[in-house]
Length: 367
Image (cartoon, rainbow, N blue to C red; front, side):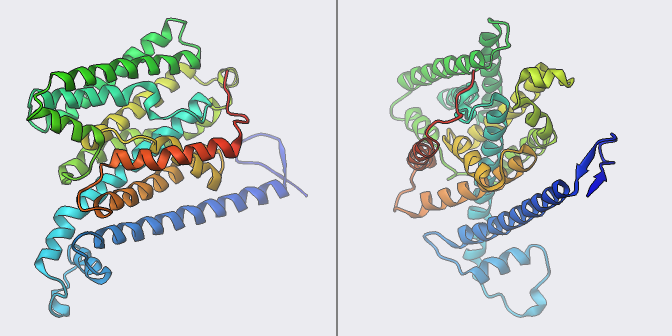
């Protein structure tokens, strides 16, 4: 049976089986999205209750509900004031920051991998992470107020992107490989500047702060950091989501994209700037957290496929869940807190090696 496809305004006819398959995929996507959202909420409650001072799930839910509803008329409080302070002032902002960082890094990685048509690409490939890290290190080195760290991270992250694009444009700016190599050169340059800053830092004062910050941590996260991350996620993140269909077309290749009227250069710049803003925001509040934007999109593709209309939201949810769980391990696995960047590397490197082995590098090359 054939039915007319009125949604695209053409006279083409589609097999009803194709429409049925599309409907099945949409239902599966909605089910996946719903399950991951519920899982995210459960993971957040678990993280709020877990720590050196354990709090029951019921008390966590009651404390959160008391901020929304007036439950004073339903009897005495079942929790202690110290539990309320821990949940509201210590753990909740930290968990929100970790979730937003995971979501931002994951959507950046998925968008970059699609645009570059290369699953080996991560947020670090365009040099923004190293540039933002140098900006934060510079602020710590000169003992500037804390609010200068995100400003400097944004600024030097943008400078790093400009350097990467300038290197890539030396060959006409049309070759994706030139852009990736430009990012590698930029990353190496700013990593050297970071090393130089560490060498010149006071070993008794600023050097320990620089080293600790570079290893990555959500230990001092507050609601101000939540705001620092929420603004880029609601601007750059939403913009990437709106460009999901353009990223799908770009993933087919430049020639195909240009043939149907896509402004490839402008689209690429929008995606790169958006990813740069998200990456710089995460570095400014947590230091360098590696491997998240590289491995999470792979798992997301296993769940929902390569269509970026579905891949980007799924990646954001999985990235948020993953980062909250890793941060929970970081603050509870030992007496002293484990740097989050160390844990993500210990987990991410073997997983990525397994992914390489599983795929045997088939179809992962890009000219």
